[in-house]
Image (tube, rainbow, N blue to C red; front, side, top):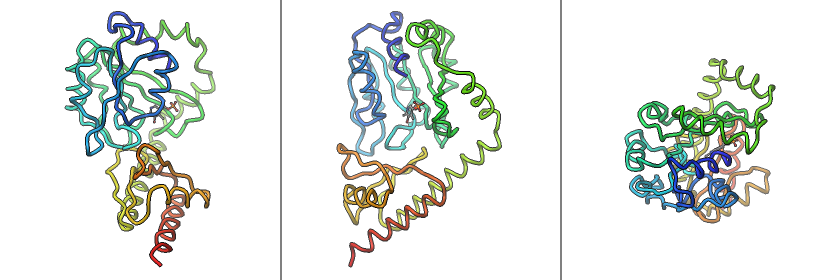
Length: 271
Ligand SMILES: *Cc1c(COP(=O)(O)O)cnc(C)c1O
């Protein structure tokens, strides 16, 4: 990702170097980290009140646009019409759509890469393929964009992918049966967890990812996070989103343990 953005900054045909790249204010925390690391100026676009990405705000960028679809940590996806309007209204900029979580229920923008040569889709095997340990991702876009990536890659890190990773990834991508099975299991467990939390009067934002973004109402988010941490159950609390928590979906057993603990914690407060 970092090498990609650095390259994008230098890709003169699409970019005025030093013009700000736009991304949502609440999003994958590595975007500002890499932008700072590589001295790429950026401008953040606040989310709308319902936590969705502000399509209007993402338009007319000068330095390009990057956003995850679905977004993190909200789990909310834009539909393809919304994605296309961002593309249409950044006609001379590179649009990077980070599809790390797309397989869990959003629509992929891959077909749009045929129509728009300035669109680059990035994917990872870390999420829906459950292979974070092999460190492999890929990009889909016009041959022009991909050629540019190939060119710059060698000046950053020429030996990015080892053979074991490649073999493992190839086998994983061919194994549709196992993939579908695990994907469906995660989605089912996610929906089960959502229902259980709703019974406990949590506000649960409909998720198109492998995590839930929730607001507890019987207890503060911070207190719940701290109490679960003492039981060695780890969920995400964000200082800048203090009413909300992000809960990654684990195995069915993990989520049962989690729901039981949350139930106990909430019941103990009532007393
Ligand atoms: C996980 C993730 C990635 C990439 O993760 P890698 O493990 O580095 O491949 C990219 N974008 C988002 C939004 C993610 O959540």
